[in-house]
Length: 68
Image (cartoon, rainbow, N blue to C red; front, top):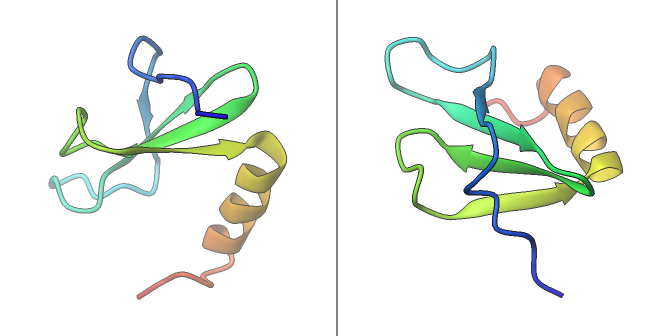
């Protein structure tokens, strides 16, 4: 099963994104999934997460588990 094409949806920039064009992540809520893309490459690859999995990922990020 392939993920839906997230190109026609409204993307919004993460509040954690760098305001100077650095680490910019955008998300879009679709019916069954949350899509994520790099705002510097909007035509590039997009990741799609089930809503539950995205919630877990967001909590992990907020907890600092993926800070480099």
